[in-house]
Image (tube, rainbow over all chains, first blue to last red):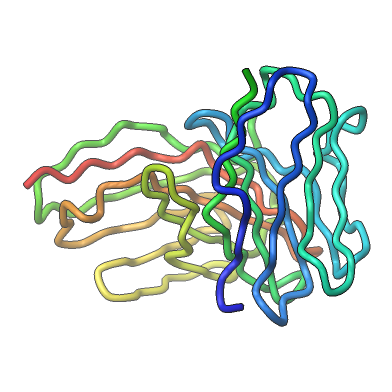
Length: 114
Length: 111
């Protein structure tokens, strides 16, 4: 597609439940990035992929967060046993190339943990 | 100290004013500099993209990069109420990978 598509737009989970978010990058883009934005605060990098391979996972809270980008499927970000502090907007972005490409963002998925 | 510093504002200007938004950074490896605009409850929209030092103009928007001072700017001429949004600077190095964002500046343009 011509834009980064994220689903769902909104997700509400009780504390301890699992949450799974999806992202379809722009067609032809090899790099996918996940960011977390809490309230109006800055963007926190979580993880990036080059095609289906993890490129950089330095921002991922390893205990409960996992992510995948499989061929012919949307990328996913999964949070096991959600906590209140996971409430945020999760943005996905895609880029055509590693070093020089601009990042194009989706509209975000708003996760509310109650 | 954060890698990228940006005054969060809020900044309020009258319609027609020239707006200047700025970021400073500490990592000399940054080579690619971007400005994003984010409306409330929306994703960031890429406004300007520049490589290394220099100026770039697109309509009412001008981006400037001064690598020697580690300072980037975005100028908005003839500002409009529709420019009211949060403006985020972002940058990355030659090795690619993640963008590092500033905190964002909230701009309000009053009619």
